[in-house]
Amino acid sequence: MIVVSPLSQTEPPRDCGLCPRLVELRHRCQADHPDWWNAPVPAFGDAQAWLGIVGLAPGMHGAHRTGRPFTGDYAGDLLFATLAKFGLSRGRYDARIDDGLTLEGVIIVNSVKCLPPQNKPTPQEINTCRRFLSAQLQALPQLRVFIALGRIAHDSFLRHLGLRAAQFPFGHNARHDLGEGRVLIDSYHCSRYNTNTGRLTAEMFEAVFAAAIAETSA
Image 1 (cartoon, rainbow, N blue to C red):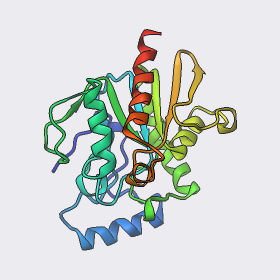
Image 2 (cartoon, rainbow, N blue to C red; image 1 turned 90 degrees about the horizontal axis):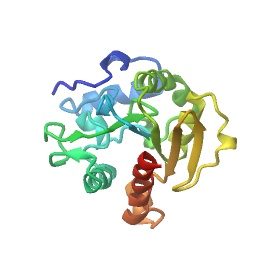
Image 3 (cartoon, helix red, strand yellow; image 1 turned 180 degrees about the vertical axis):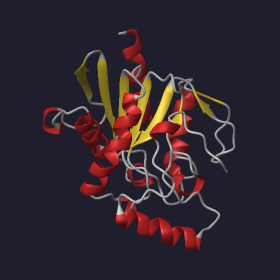
C-alpha cells in the first residue's frame, strides 16, 4: 500500500537511519512480518487543518503494521470514534489504511515517527525525531489549536516551540495559552492501558475535543 502524506516533503525516508535502536527493531519486524508497513509512519489528515493532534509514536500492531497513525489498535478505535462524534472525519473508520476515512480540519502528527521498543522512545530518539515534527508543524501555519496525547507529546511539542515544559504543567484537559492565538490542550493518551485502568474514560476524552472546538468560537 502506497501512503501519500499531506506533508510528504517533510517526511523521513522509509529507510531512515537516524535512531539505531529503532532501525534494529524495524529490521526485525521486516523479517518477521514482511507484509506490514515497517517504516516511519507519515502524518495523516487535512493539510488545511485548524486542529493538530500530536501523538507519541506508532504502535506495534497499529500504525507500524498499517502505515497510518492510530489505525489498527485500540487507541485508534477511541480516537477515530471521537473524531466522528464531533464531525471531524468523513467516511467509516474500519481499522484499515484503505477504508476511505478522511479527516476534516484535523491532522495527526507523531512525536516519534518509528516504532519504539515497548512503546517507549528514549529522550535522544524523541529529540532526534523532533526535526520532522517541527518541519510538519511549520508547514501548517493555519493550525491554532493543538491536542497533545500524553506527556511526551506535550513536552516535545513545547520544545518545538522553544518553550519550557515546566511553565506549562501537563494535566488532562489542561489549557495552555501559547500566544499568537495558539492554544494547547492536554489529554491522557487514548491507550488501552489508560482506558482499562480508568485513568481515561470516553467521556474524559470527548471533553478534550469539546474544549478544542470551543476555541474556534472563543
